[in-house]
Structures are given as structure tokens and as C-alpha cells.
Length: 103
Image 1 (tube, rainbow, N blue to C red):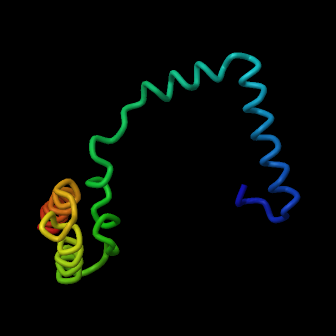
Image 2 (image 1 turned 90 degrees about the horizontal axis):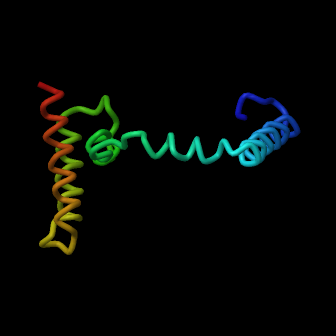
């Protein structure tokens, strides 16, 4: 849809997408699509897949910046500071992954 230059063309694309979904529903294809999506495997831990996003830094950031961001975020989510153990473990795992990648 972002490839269209005019708003009218964007609306047309939306209309066609919705119409295709309605036709799929009438044909009974919606159930098949839903079953196919249900069989797709989800990432084991999506936050670890994107450690830069979790730490709030850019992929080209220096190690010092990444470590500073890790310490700042860990202070906020640490269980002793009112955060959760799960969040602290996610941050730690993300930092370990980045350290392995940088070596």
C-alpha cells in the first residue's frame, strides 16, 4: 500500500485486500489459512532474537554504549528495584548474546 502515490489508490488497495478476505471466508479458505498459521513455529524467545531492540541501542553502537544501556535498564528492571525476575533474565541473556557476537 505504501507504494501507491495517491490516497485514492491506497484506498483501492485496502478495498481489494478486504474483498479478498471476504471471498476467502465464503470459499472456506479462511479455516485452511488459520490452520496453516497455527502450524508455524514461533520464535523460542523473541526478545533474545532482537537484543539491540531490547537494550534500546543501535546495532552499530560501541560496546561501551551497549554496556551502559544494559546497566541502566538492569537498574530499572532488577527485582530488588521493583522489577521482575523475568525481565532481568531477558536483559542478561540479550547482553550475553551481544558479547558472544562481538568476540
